[in-house]
Length: 132
Image (cartoon, rainbow, N blue to C red; front, top):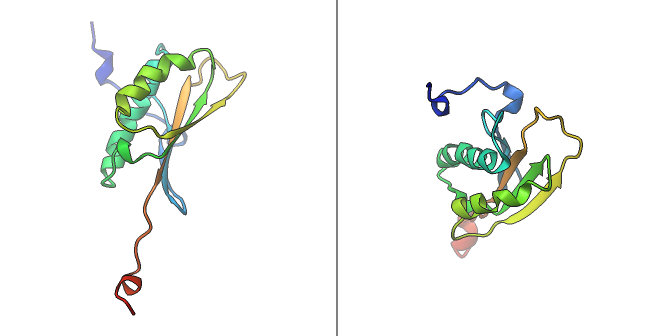
């Protein structure tokens, strides 16, 4: 039997996660399982966070730097099954969370899509700390 966990179907550009610069920092938008067919919401949530880790690492950030999580979900009844996944990836931090229930999503749509918001500290102006 072929191990399907190591194979990924290429995703369209529209479904790939995006890094968006914001006034407060940045947002990783559109994180989702690369292959969601046959996966429950908890596994899709886990896959979304796994997608975020290398994107954050490229910017010298980690999941502990996340200040808000926005979850776009297809079924509110399935969402509590993802709570252990949140505890797994955020064991010592508790980012704020917003849940948006997208009613009437087609069955082929991902069960969960995650946006991560990272607020970065403002760069200090060297002149303001030099006492001028």
